Amino acid sequence: MASASRLFSDLEVDVLADAPLGPLTWFGIGGRADALVRPRTVEALATLIARCHRDGIEFRVLGDGANLLVADEGVSGVVVRLDQPVFRERKLNVRGSVEAVRAMAGVSLPRLITDAVGAGLAGLEGLGGIPASIGGAVRMNAGGGFGAISDSLHSIAVIDRRGEIGVHPASALELSYRHASIPGAIVLWAAFRLEEGDPVALRDRLKEVMSYKSSTQPLAGHSAGCMFKNPPARSGEPGPRPSAGRLIDQAGLKGTRIGGAVVSPHHANFFLVEPGATAGDVISLAELVASRVEDRFGVRLEREVVVWDRRPVEESS
Ligand SMILES: Cc1cc2nc3c(=O)[nH]c(=O)nc-3n(C[C@H](O)[C@H](O)[C@H](O)COP(=O)(O)OP(=O)(O)OC[C@H]3O[C@@H](n4cnc5c(N)ncnc54)[C@H](O)[C@@H]3O)c2cc1C
Image (cartoon, rainbow, N blue to C red; front, side):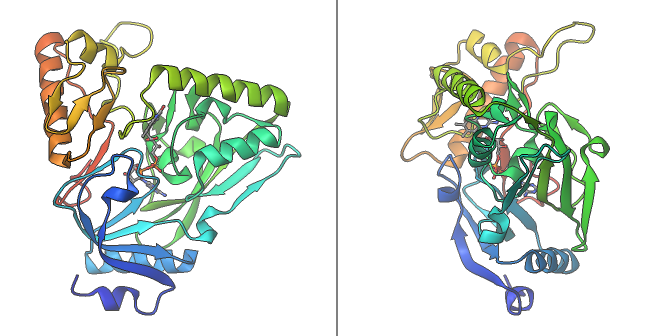
């Protein structure tokens, strides 16, 4: 990247040029970034965002890489990772204020849940077993059968493209199934409204949620969780969204394989990768599965997994 030294040289950041991104994702495959940048301060992050915007340099943020597929050709520009200590800070208030937990974007969601449960704070335990950073969990509105992160979200801070920090109440965001509108380039922190609860009962509930998840999903393999969102219910039909996994299963696609990518025989919406798999295998398999489901049921599945490739950020999904 030609203007790298102008971007970073005076900032408190660690930079790795031509950085492999695959190992930072749960799939474990995919290409490289021109620069992987790990800011050491919020100010450095904000300045970097503003400079990338000013210079027209692609800017992306990587969380825990649990919902991400990086294309084999990699991505151009800057990828930021929020893993330095300042982005791992969290504050728990056990005296039951409105905002009971505030966590920086780089905090691990599973770790925060364990801490909240241990402190007798109820509200996040239904998200047990979901791998995520707080920033990624808010951006994806992560959740499942026991609720979504938006259920207890109180407010978020974001940094916009000019590098300015703004705080937004959850009520001002558009939060829906696996979707959150983020009014800025990056989530900086999130605050949660939690209730006081009994730590022992909360721990039991968390164990229950996690054992349900591990009995229904192939958590040990390399995947990014569900490949597709559950499609909307047909208009006029009441009740929950139909399960994308069930549609894929009913189309007879469990175990379907392209190269080293395979539809899990255990849970049809999980795509697993085996040694030697490429991101191209996963993308081709997703296209094949979506078109077979559409042929069979007339339902077009929308990908839940985010794909990063050489297209500009706005066009990638
Ligand atoms: C085994 C397994 C099980 C899973 N089960 C579930 C489940 O039950 N429910 C569920 O909802 N998901 C599930 N997932 C998917 C994944 O856990 C969630 O989507 C999670 O929210 C991803 O968070 P992340 O930090 O890993 O984000 P990443 O995968 O790193 O990034 C995903 C998107 O979020 C953006 N992002 C990351 N950090 C920020 C930030 N600070 N600000 C703005 N944008 C940001 C990225 O740019 C990218 O667009 C599962 C995944 C795996 C591997």
